[in-house]
Image (cartoon, rainbow, N blue to C red; front, side, top):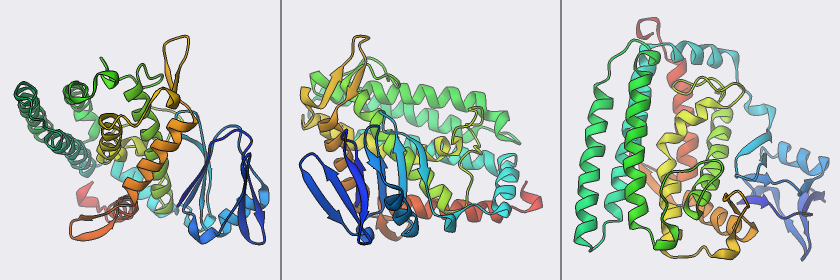
Length: 330
């Protein structure tokens, strides 16, 4: 399970080699082997003994901001990065292999977007016409992205960035049209969100950032050395690269919550500047929905694992890719 402490005043302590959650409604004992990660929001507390218990059991402890994104973490030294992987990672970043790697990621992202749009087709003939037209345009951009040539990622970055952005705009325009009226949006707004849907999406992506960063760290990869995203100082930019493979999982969860109208006015607040923020109830619903979805077993390339475990397996394969980089492939 993923333990989330996001209620002001909640505490996590150690009691007899177990965790004890103390909140306004009482206490709850949890065995360490039942927990995969612990996420702590502002206003919640963890004791040093509980933190050490988490480290001893290789449980990630994440400190998250109000958007759901991790701003700090504790982890076991058992899966710290080794210098060999880090050196190879840097070599890979400036190799021709990196060009194909990022092209594959972005084309896979577009494939995922197309698949999701196909899964939400309706009986409305006019909406389906718009859907078909948008899917054709997405496939056109995918073809352009695959055709890019360059020796290093910098050579293709401007075109790749432009076409990725254009395809994302098409994708989200269609998403908005298929949503119930109260969840429709005019633009993809990040921080702050300007509507309920983007508010949910941003927080969901924040959860995903944390899981991907943790998977990279466990695999011995430095999440701060990016390939396509390389200009953000002191940010885990490799996470921004890898997350493109998995954003559609969050999209799917948020779209379904919206279509089912699970989120109501008690789940979010609107500030004076017009920005939307999730409140405790909304966070609870979204976090549970995302974790349930990531715990589902799916088949990827003949391997049946939970979605969360597939992220870990990908990170391990990426570390192997870095280590196998040869002089002739640079």
